Length: 266
View (spheres, rainbow, N blue to C red):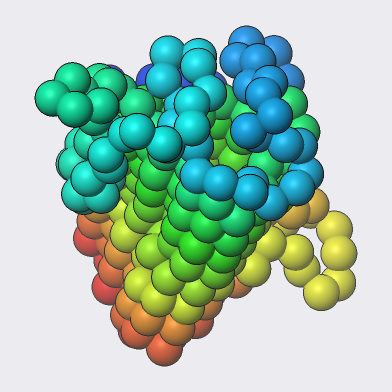
């Protein structure tokens, strides 16, 4: 019931090895730090990309090269659908990513995939792995140990820390995710907050029909299965797990514990 395979289709996820299909779904949070520490990060070294300082000009990343945007034309289509296009004349730089002036990258362990668009004002702390065709919007704050699959959105003033986005997961506006996992095509309404620490301390347990299950984690936000959604200004208590296709209605606080697939939490 609480195993990974009950929540996610990992067949197309680039980091499927993070998950053990038959273990509790939150186990990936326990292995995330070691997994990301061992990752082979590219060397992003250039005067155009200063460490811990706002970028003075927009840049292009292409096959390990860091390029000025001077002389290139950029079409800002739908990033998540491969709509970001960089050309020099009629020649397209296939797979090029763009980081806008004003964005801040902190540390050397940052891996940015192909077709990624990072807007000005975003702050990304190492380590971070940002999958292909992902959009990191203005004011987003990635606090470290953030990993996304392909075609994800980390939105305006959204804060993410020690969390995993599967392919096509989106937290578009004013969200907070700590120690959490979003399944494939999961979507957070504006203002969704995942609380991840109990007031009274101690490990977080998951309430199920068979009783409490100790996760062994002191910090644990929420896990949303594939296609699960939250409405605007919703909140989850620490240790909330929502099955595939579940819905947390707007302006609603989800109680801690397991909510089966297709649940509607009002």
